[in-house]
Amino acid sequence: MASLWLVSRASRRFLKPSNSFSRTLFAVSSTYQLTTNSKNPNPNPYPNATLLGPFTQGHRWTPSCVEFDLRLLAHISSSSSSTGAKNDGNRASNDAKVEVEASWIDLYLPRQARPYAKLARLDRPIGTWLLAWPCMWSITLAASPGHLPDFKMMTLFGCGALLLRGAGCTINDLLDRDIDTMVERTKLRPVASGLLTPFKGLCFLGFQLLLGLGILLQLNNYSCILGASSLLLVFSYPLMKRLTFWPQAYLGLTFNWGALLGWAAVKGSIDPAIVLPLYLSGVCWTLVYDTIYAHQDKEDDLKVGVKSTALRFGDSTKEWITGFGIMCISSLALSGYNVEIGWPYYAFLAAASGQLAWQIWTADLSSRVDCNRKFVSNKWFGAIIFSGILFGKLSS
Image (cartoon, rainbow, N blue to C red):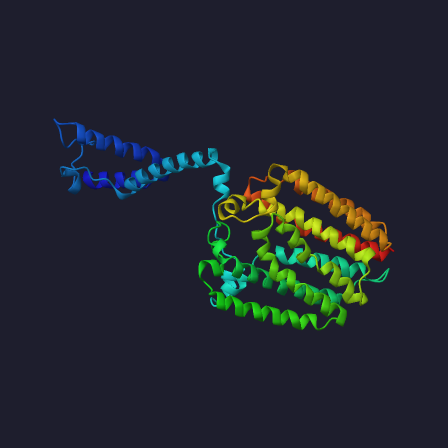
């Protein structure tokens, strides 16, 4: 009976959560005594009780829960030290890590469709927003005073922005597949990683352009010619980083073509006094956000040998993009003045100026995470300008 009582008592002690740390120390202490006591190789911690079974052997029996506690204690100790080292380490090395996160593409699309969706960057809609906003600005500016913009036209341009952005990304990945394999941020893209062959990517490009053509043909003839001419910019942009330190300016010419096209789709022609300042403002805006974005890859760009405004401006980046930001806001003000828009537009323009100033002066250009965060925030800049144009036209 005494033996059974002892086993029951020992079991309760080992299973009691509040004594976990004490049990760990007890096991370490008992093991140490077993290995150091030469006179009594089998010490009995309970001299008044008769030991049973494994307690009478020449080795100490340790319950599995105690062994688990010892391993857990070692793991916590090592984890604490490694966590401290990470917190005190170089922040740049942490930013350089590539995090592969599951997106809605991985969760909901069939396996065969996932590489194509990623090739078109459907899981990263910021590019579509940046391409669509100049179109929406222009369409809303072209609306009659006191009236809402043409909703059908905005829907067509929204779908067109999605398709053209996907086509541009496909062209970029096909031409840059050798470079992408050497850049940390882009090495897992479908073509660079081998998930898609260049031929499959080319077929997908043709499919996207065919759908885009279907949208373009619904516009007037002037707009069809103007829209088709933008393909020269789309196809040649990926080559600019090999030729000049100003590929971001060329991207601005490409991404903001909708500032010309939106007005033409509504009016049948362009008004240079209104749409050219609007187009220039978009180019300067692109130079701001894409220069910040390019700072994510500046180390890899140096190794690979490609060029960017981030490398061109260097430590003077914030001064340069501040100048482009001022030109952007000034051009937007001039375009609004020429179209005789209402006063709410200028109130929203002031708010957009504050948003642009915030992202320029708070951007940590040495942090990839912060550069990407500021880049993504530009969708709100575009939304503020659109809201200003909308309320300004309704009040004029």
